[in-house]
Image (cartoon, rainbow, N blue to C red; front, side, top):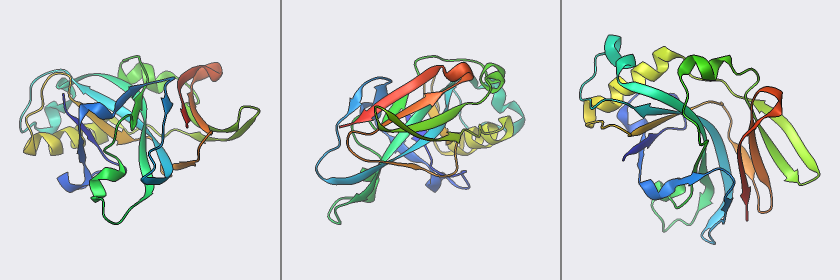
Length: 191
């Protein structure tokens, strides 16, 4: 399984980071910030699951190659030691926390008020950050771009940003992703 993620709308293949499967984590697990990392940023993501083997997809057929979508938080280090490679900013254990459900595009778009909320303390929540889900055309363009350089297999994931600004987190803070009627979709706490 491969995971391609980007923190911006992709223009070229260089905008994507190819991440190992050890970055995947489930909602509800605590994230233990390593000592080599100074601060953590989180960005809400739309996750696209590949449903057919694909290479060099043409844009008009791209919607045939993904079957389900999910949501996630992608974590990256705000700052790292100068001696470490830049790829270490987002390619570390547990740095991609995914919602456990897979749904169709229309099911996800129909959920009103998807948002991310930072928990400063257990009693104090920060303001909500509304999620902006990428359009189907943006998903198609991302699939075309990645499949031009990589063979996509069933179960591979492509993650696109669902917010424009990352959320800064410190130790003992948490992050929720909520949907309709404040239904909790994802939760993580930084330790």
